[in-house]
Amino acid sequence: MTDHQDESEDVREYERLKSLLDAFGLDMPTDSRRQLEEKVGSLEPAWTAFQERAPHVSVRVRFDNGFILDGADEDVFVPA
Image 1 (tube, one colour):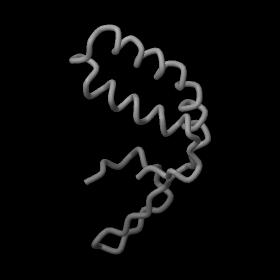
Image 2 (tube, helix red, strand yellow; image 1 turned 180 degrees about the vertical axis):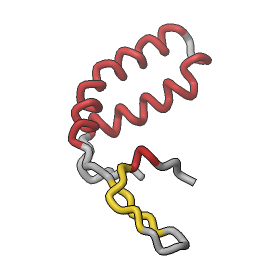
Image 3 (tube, one colour; image 1 turned 120 degrees about the vertical axis):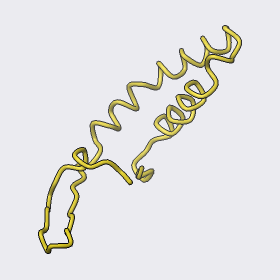
């Protein structure tokens, strides 16, 4: 889940352009791809700063046997 509340216009534009580049970059004309890569590169500092500000997410899991795992870092779980 992505929380869009704290995103700046530059962060939203980075996400949009990076997605386009990843999906269609290989099929784009060379000059268009180069321009898109440059624009993505110019927005990367805003993206990096946004990710550094991202809140820490933890997970609480209750297993069938009643065991509760609380406060586990989200990175240890794979989304279903």
